[in-house]
Length: 289
Image (cartoon, rainbow, N blue to C red; front, side):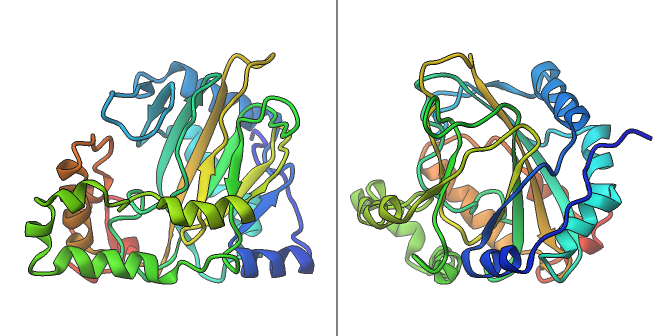
């Protein structure tokens, strides 16, 4: 059987750092074969397309719900599962793969939390992303990586709860019709928040095979790719929810209505696939996961 995931040991210092900050660089987690297969997945898939003009992310191409045999082989791999068990208590459930391509002078996403990717679970429930750059990331040359902010610098546990409560408020639909709504940074950091986030951001170099584990409460943004020897930066992101995460159609419906109210495109409707769940059911119980 092909080896896609290396066996790595997480140190006590790294465990502490992940618990405090909400992110951790995982060195040489993936083999060259895994990276080659993920590169082919993005390059050859017709799901990875040029983004529409109304899409709020400045990418060259993007593809949601992007997975195949290699994706399943990765998250089923014992080395992969053992790595996550060293950092996260509960079992994780794979939900979605996303492919991104960033060409020079494209900005990607501004500072945000993964509100849309995890819009189908209760606001306080846990979820994680593993970002896998498919080319080297050099912060002193072309950049093109990610910037992320330690949770202790800007705690965000109230962020999801505020939005969950707001979309259920009796006056919220009326508010969405006002001029004030047009200036609301519902999905991205405000200008004031950006002052703090830029001051406290962390950027790392990545070799091919490295990955970044993020929990859903970490502010992060794309770092634009500068002109240089790399024609583009491709990356693949795997989304996971905690096995105890609960389904919320209330959150799902509310956030999608907001995306449409903003005139943006909904490029994924993953949460609506879970038709066998009721509000509050464990997502892990769905036959569609």
